[in-house]
Amino acid sequence: MAILGILLFFCLSSVVTSQSQVLNIRDNGKICSQWFNAQPGVSVSFTQNRECISAVSFESQNGKSRLCCQGMPLTTPSANFPRECGRQKYQPHKTRIIGGFHANANSWPWQILLRGTNNQCGGALIDQQHVLTAAHCLKFPVQAQDYKVYIGAHAIDKPMYMEQEIVAKQIWAHELYNDKTLVNDIAIIRLSKPVQISDTVNFICLPGSEVGTAVNQTVWVSGWGRTAHLGDQSPILKQTWLHTMGNRCNTYGTASFNQEKQICAGRYTKDSSTCQGDSGGPLMFESSNGQWFINGVVSYGSTTCGTEGNPGVYTRVKYYLPWIESKLKAA
Image (tube, rainbow, N blue to C red; front, side, top):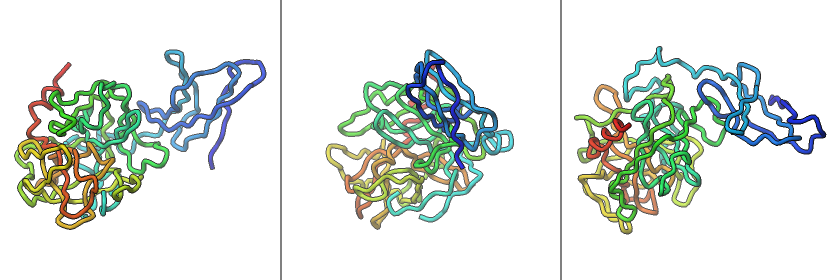
């Protein structure tokens, strides 16, 4: 049962109104509400979060306030889980976003949800403080503080109690990104603080020799994109497997496929592909030892996603490794 409390009156005069806050943001071990303006004569109520293990109290910063409590620890601490890229404790379904299956919770522990001022995309953790995503997910000129990254998310239609929410500190879109041809559709987000690695959060490996891009190689994608052409976005993380298809990709609108910089992947039957809302998410390959690599970033495809003969186009990560490394080392 939800517990509703009134925490404080901001003055001794008659209360003129009240506001309700929800504690659903994970921040450095605490669970907090959004920052809000404290108004004289206004009472603040809140719904008790079941993950709180301490009393709720006020915090103030730069003229704004929020409510916080100490949260339950994030499942298994990193000391009890190996810090090796591309490994997960909870294994994914090895069955086959449109036509896909709901993913096992936390089976893609590097998958992130990116939210801007009016859009939503995917992405992947590539170390404790950097996310790889698509440049077309960004609004130019880019204002890093407008973007939040959610790590460990699964069901995004429910309050996020155990997930980590981190604001972007710096964002690099590729300097030669072209929004007409969608060439160089890649971006890196530096988070304002490192993520907490646990049994539900880890980062994926950048591609090495096991890149898995030969024709008909099995690769995987995951995301919260639309579940059908013109359909609603999925509230639950979904996944599907695809085949790499060489230079089979068609030209969609003004975008032209460049096999050196892009990967073409899809199914030879309909109803399995990425769609709107999956953008920026990872195209993944599993090596023979069970380690996962990010081969591509969801870029673009047919407007009628999921139709037979219309594979998707993914930015080829291996081509951009020197660019990625330069940004990771940037001050």
